[in-house]
Image 1 (spheres, rainbow, N blue to C red):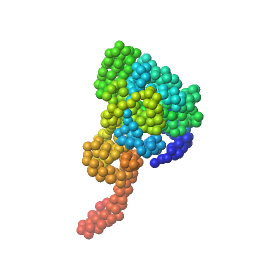
Image 2: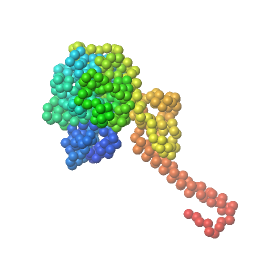
Image 3: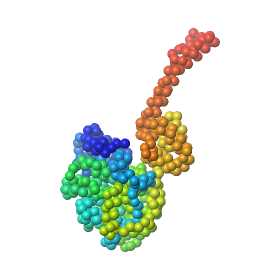
Image 4: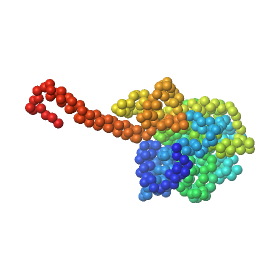
Length: 473
């Protein structure tokens, strides 16, 4: 496992020989960009054109965009070791956490505009008032529900950003302004699980400033999937005929998408009808509860809409939350159904476990069994898993899974660390297998030429009359 200094050295390095083209090849062209806005914020040569990072001028190949992208190298074990105390609860479904509670704000003004319990707004305003932060990177919206990244520096600015937007937003695109325009020293961030990986990298080492822009509080929002702006423009306004500037808020609950209008009417749509507008990289994300945030907040697991479910993870998360409770800014309850949250999280982690049949057929050429192939590809889809999770997902007895994992480990197709198993890079795995097949094939050819042919030739000569026109290679 990498240690903190190794990761910092990597983030500091400008000599990887990888430029924007590397980001395009590995992330953008593979439809893996989460549109977080990090690359456009830390590099003046990159801009956003039609929801896609684009190189605007000469690329010096400093690799900054590639290093800080949340979809490139991210040493999970190192961050987990640095962020979480040893005695935390470790859950495959929920990640590491210290406490799980239901909570809501005590501020009536916050509750009037909040999505659910107003916990995020209350925590941010409390952190601002106590000096823990002097600004927050948030996402606001315009009247047409276009997301608008914002730097909030007052309680009123925080309140203006309440409510879920349900559209991907480059929230981190304002990071540069927070440093160079507003000279903010201590930042909070609120966003999606995928974005937080970029924030943790910036927190570890900022390429823009050693003095400003330090992230001191990171709040993650539960997220099963997010959507492109086509959800608003094409579906809600186009197909449903609803004027966007007449919408008060939107919410997802119990398999339905709810649209709350300014006139108090409510439109509900089955969530499956929104699938075609899902942001593509969301199909491959495994993180439902923002597992590396300081505090994770959502609505699943609570019985009342005016409450939030809150996962307290790091020491700083516990500290600021307890201070807000002590100051009576937030009230808490133990009435929370953790199994519901775990169920949703596991559903996201296992949403893609099927691999194309043509791939399975091709892999059989490597002299590997169906169960080994399916275990490897399922593990690849899960990202990492325990033996029991694999058994559950594959609906296969655990002793069979254990035997199969042993074979895969011997062939170097998988790696196990601290009880979690992950698939190794398929390029390395298959190239290694190809070399084995090639060497085995060459060895068999050599044996055929040096041993088998001479022996057979002797028998043939001894028992047959050789024709004069027979040809020999």
